[in-house]
Image (cartoon, rainbow, N blue to C red; front, side, top):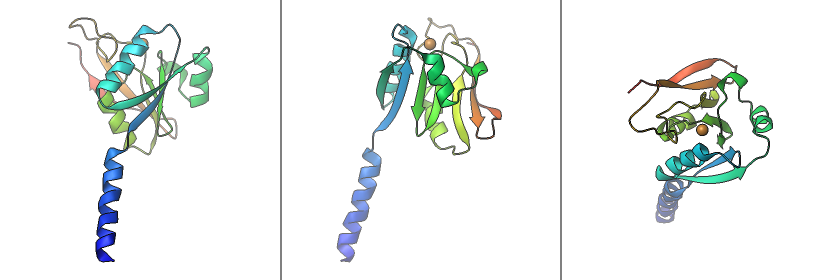
Length: 144
Ligand SMILES: [Cu+2]
């Protein structure tokens, strides 16, 4: 019996490790940089469910993305929004934060994932939004 339990425990651990990292991405049909961001996510182990939308403004409102933090595409992972060109590592960090509704990279800064422009990088921040509606800087990417 004890042995069976041990096997069950090992198996549970295995299932957890093998669980795919899935994210839903909502985007406009003609959005090229959105597709480039999706490629960035896939290269970092995410399984992307791509949703082509006719009305992104409605999607953002439904998901609670503050207007001033808006960008092009909107992702959803574990019920949290991922607005704009958020780097994969910051999405992993967001998953650990139950106090946050989501995270955003407002606008479309050059040099963020999916917005590569040679060596150029505009400075940008990943901004988290708490369940109380407060904003906090989760990551800071300097100019390059
Ligand atoms: Cu974009």
